[in-house]
Image (cartoon, rainbow, N blue to C red; front, side, top):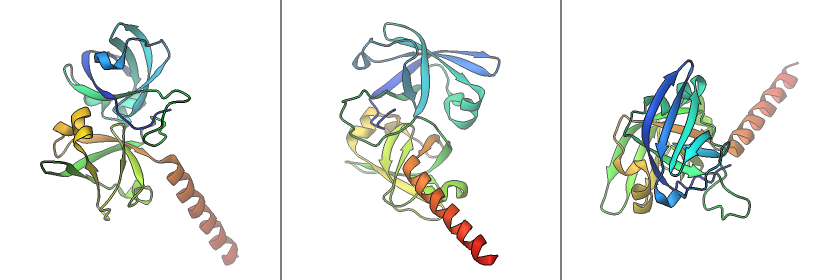
Amino acid sequence: MFTGIVQGTAEILAIEPADQFIALQLRFPASAGTDFSIGASIALNGTCLTVRKFDGSDVWFDAIASTLKLTNLGELKVGNKVNFERAAKIGDEIGGHLMSGHIIDTVQISAIERTDTNCCISFERPAKYARYLLDKGFVGLNGCSLTMTDVTDETFSVWLIPETLERTLFGAAQVGERVNLEIDPQTQAIVDTVENYLASRQTTESI
């Protein structure tokens, strides 16, 4: 489980393609600590991956074909960086929202407006997920828990403060980039339940 509060970025040191998956070696900053453990979960660009081995600040992960298909991890190159968040511990302060690290798809950055103090980034709003992407709702974007605003039929936007821009990849984001998307599971459950209920009522009344 994660909170959507990205803790920093880690650098890709090596990528080893294999049959139906890739092996990734990352170097984490000193702020991430070195107390990793085999089998632990860490979110990379919001994608929950499992630690395969580690040596100090160097950590290895495997990403299977279905993960590469749904996320932007398959686009990574040596030298690139990814947002990371280590799994939340019981008793930790939850500063963001509860997130699973289960990416549903990617969305493309459609516009960026920067000022001296903050930044507004707009994303495409895919029709198949539009009912879950609601004004003032939250969404996971490359692992960052963010609140949506200015939602239209085609796009939604998020506002980023300097701290977020400095700590995450969004500080260097470019129009056209694909960003990992995680839907709020509570919103999804509520919307699906209501839609199913209304559909069943309509079916019953038509009999």
